[in-house]
Amino acid sequence: MSDQDNKKPLKLFFWLWAIITVAGVAVSLWAPGYLMPRSMSNNMHLTILTMVVFSVAAAPVAAGVYAASIYMLRTWSYRGDDVPPPAPVIRENNKVVASWLLASTVLTVFLLIWGLGALAVDNSSTGKNPLVVDVTGQQWVWSFSYPGTHVESNQLYLPENREVEFRVTSDDVTHGFWIVNMGVQVDANPGTITTIHTTPNRLGEFTVRCEQFCGLNHSFMDTEGFVVSTQNFNSWLAAQPQRS
Amino acid sequence: MNRSRSLGIAAASVLVVGGALGLAGFALATAAPHQTALNCTPVQGASKTCAITLATYPDSGEGVHGKDGGAHPDWVTYSNDNVNVPANSTIVVTINQYDSGGSLNNAFFDQVMGTVGGTATINGKTVTHADPNDIGHTFTLRGIPGMGTDLFVSVPLPADNNSKTPVILNGVAYAKPVVVQFSFKTGSKGIYEFNCEFPCGGSREGQFGQAMSTYGYMSGTFTVQ
Image (cartoon, rainbow over the protein chains, first blue to last red):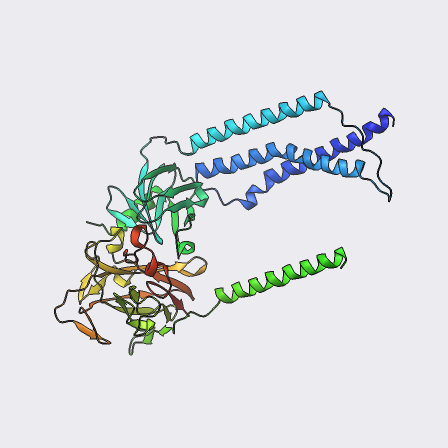
């Protein structure tokens, strides 16, 4: 087989890789808008951005696997009834090995640094007058109290563009406090208060769910939440019955 | 037997077994509730208003479990776990609470929430909340996600009066019940679920096992139709 014949299949591999990579990047950029819930906080925005960046970074790697599979099936498959001839001897190619190792290392370090940064940002507090909300899970109802106001509710009202500090606990078994649209998810453990921060940045309705299986009516343990303007939030607080 | 025939038989077997499991699961999931439904009784002279009476007992010797108490005669229970009420109506609920009690895990449930006027009457006295350290059970009703209007009603049922003139039911003496009455408005058709939020089930952290975690005892459904 001549050098020219050897290069033809490699061209096929690179074309396949390029096409699948472009398709993968396109899907990575397009799909989250349809598959992910509507973002209503800085945390959720970061979560979706992380998913997009990781998917884009993974696209050329996945494309390499698919392209190599197609390339090998097309180039080295044997058609015939006889015993196939011996396969070509595998030769080491230092350039390929070095490139693969280098690319893998760069990608892995990139993902690690991004992930650690996202984790750190995700639960950081700006310290600018956060609204504190005490969240209590109990089979199978969430309740929310607003310290300093004597207001308790089974619905969660939050003002727009103000940082919120959730102090989450449980009165019985472990529950999972999950606001999908805000990228807020933390266990509610009995006897322990866990804090998590977010800043709602879009008006609208959301659902608070339990994401830890907690018993008979776990699947019904959700409640409504609302992000409202500061003025409407204050009006809502004022309209609530005050506990003594 | 050739290989393709074996594969065919194996695939058919998987389909048959999978189908049978699917049918059995569907039948279980859609099975009618095991208790006869309690129907709301129209209140004469009041438009779109009906009334129901429930009870909470310290054991299962009363209510729908039968005189012998059924499978768990020592478990606390509501009198009914399956109630039919009309949509877009006012439901007047009377609950006779025969059980003793104690402190709530979460004082949030000492409040009367979601009722008409935000109040209930306890032995005839109008209240907005009860003593969180003297609760027998709670009646807490909420919507099931995706089924009907969002609804949340929660009313504390104080512990018994420690009456010295007990009531005899089926030959068993119970303390004179605390009578709690309230009304709430139903929304659209759907299924709503109620349970107790007082830790009366035992067996687990928070005391929410056994009767608290079994339909037919301290949990049930309201079918709005």
